[in-house]
Image 1: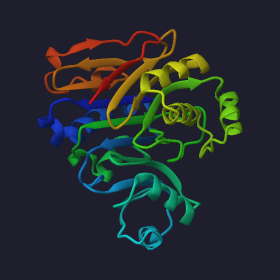
Image 2: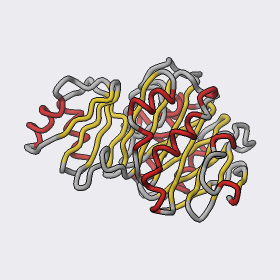
Image 3: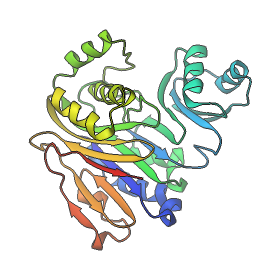
Length: 295
């Protein structure tokens, strides 16, 4: 079933409240996905400090920050939020990600970029958010997901968001029925996978097209042309926030738009506590239409 929440802030005055608002939204979706959860935050100064890039990992080796720092010749800071580990370094994001892969091939990279940090875990979503410190986080954009596993095992690696490109995240409610055939096509083109999750296939597909020069709207239109199944997707980058549903809009979605923010969730109850919600433009996204908002 799964639950999606996302918040894209237009009003900088709300930035200090990003984490608390997102946690409240996530808490309303626990019954849609009680087994695991994940959150992506954009712009938090603790998780994404100025002048540094970040990587998020599962299964990181002990003392990885020191090992990566020695390989890069810079100081690398680590944050242990088991099962997620976050590393920061004053080097380009791709270099940091590539170095981590080289020195710790057993770790799973679950997010990287200039602005984003991804945190995943198993268990009650609100308890995870509290343990990760999400309620006190700030920033301009956040995405969350509560998972009810259907296509793969209950693991932190199977949790959403799937963040396989720089500053990119994708969360998914539904199921891609032809993901294995798409996965084989992508593997034939050299794309590697970290899990058996159907959502990762969608994320890899979108990331590939973004890397090849498509904008987010085009990448999601191409996904709609190639993937079968029932789905609602929320996809974020450092400057965009997008929602798309399958051709018959089988999976629920609701959007609230104000001058201060754009918010999206699987159900309205996750939006009900947001400031100014009584005056928001509230609508259900139309089938197949790609909605994109830019920072």
